[in-house]
Every structure is written in C-alpha cells, then in structure tokens.
Image (tube, rainbow, N blue to C red):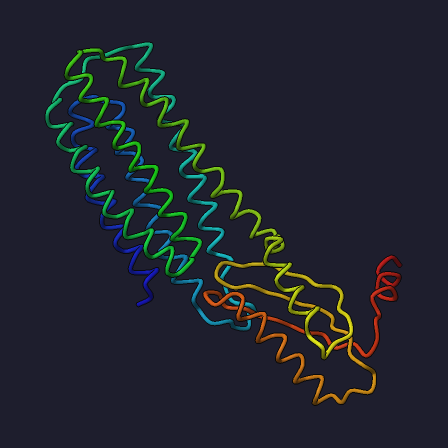
Length: 297
C-alpha cells in the first residue's frame, strides 16, 4: 500500500477517536468551543475517508474511458476538503452567535479540559506524521490534509486555553468568542486549499520558476535552433508538458528523435517526485507565425 494511502487510513482512525471523545463531552458540557471541535473532527473523518477513495481512484491506470488517468480527482478532493472546512466554520460561527445572545453555563469542566488536552497531544502526533508524508511524497491531498489537521491543532490549543480561563474566572462569554475566532481562522485556512485545487482543475500553467527551468533546458540544447508553443499543466501528482522544437531541416528523423528524448529526460529530471508526461513536436522550420494566422481564421 502506498504511503499516502496509509496516511489517510491513520488520519481516518484518529479522527474517529477524536469525534467520540469530543462529541460526548461537548454535548454533556454544553461548550460551543468543544462542540465545534467535535463537529470539525467529524468532518475530518468524512474528508479523510474521501481522501482515501480519491487516492485509490487516482492511482488507477488509464483506460478507454479515462485516457489520461484519474489524477484530477486529487485536486477535486482538495476543493471538497476546503469547502467542507468553510461550511463547518459557518456553522460554528452561527452557534457562537447564538450562545452570545442566549448565554448558558457550561458543565463537566474538568472532563472537557482533560479531553481537549488528550486531543491536542493526539492531533500533534498526527500533524507531525502527515507533514512527514507530505514532504516525502509532495502529494496535494496529503498536504491539504496536513494543513487541515494543523488548523485543528491550533483550535484544540485555543479551546483548552479557553476552558482553563473559564474554569478560573467563571466568564462564560470566553467560550463563544473563541468559537468565532476559530471559525474565522478555519475559513482563512481553507481559501488557499480551494484556490490551488480549482487552478489545477482549470489546467493552470506550472509556476513561473518551473516554466523558466524548462525554457533553460530548451535554450541550452544545441540540437534545436528554437522552440515555441510551450504549454504546461498539472493534474494531481502528474505534470503534462508539450512544446514545438525547431530542428535543422537536414537532420535525420533518428537524430531528431534522440534530441527530443534528451529534452524529455532533462525536463523529467526537474520533477523527480512527479510523473511527467512530455510531448516534443518536431518542426523542420519555425511555423509559429503560420499556426497563429490559421488559429485566427
């Protein structure tokens, strides 16, 4: 089993444990902050299950229906995850406002503190593990999952601090005010996840620094005289690149093919942790202006 899939199974199991712990204490205590954290953990569980499905589907080989594979399900999963975070944040925001307008005293304070302290430790261990997997695999789904649980780490710490303050001061408004802060932070954290996933689904080009690295390879290859129509896109863990390379008209097809192979190998070396698909169109002369005129008509 791939490391990414193992990571999603671990995060799913941890989320399930946290849901049971927080939901029980959140309902008994009446704490909006603890309940909000429980709801967030339940959504974590749902998202982690979806991520496992996404990774399992994305690694399937291309077939007659999906000629380029199913790798785009990875950015789709990231968009879903970011959207789920945002929806849960809106719900938490609403519940916090309700408690501010209709305050009620919390119960089971000591139990709540112990549960949130345990949740903090468990979540920290999970974040460290997911960060390790994300750095090793550079997988977008795991990166989004690590960021998601990192927001949980901060919110768990904030809830624990708030419970301690409420226990010492008796001020119940600390709970819903913290809930508002957690909701705002969750939305702020979700925006980059959604943005990156949407750009990938729309076939946005690679970052400029990566494109410049590809240009350097093309410009430094003495086997071609020029190039044009360089196009790039990323789909999950796969990168697609196409370019028209201009060769001397007298070069043999065999020699031109060897040059094209060298260009493809050099480009693939730029992205060692990705699956790179490169197409080099071999032109006997620069036909870029001619093709641009044809495109207009």
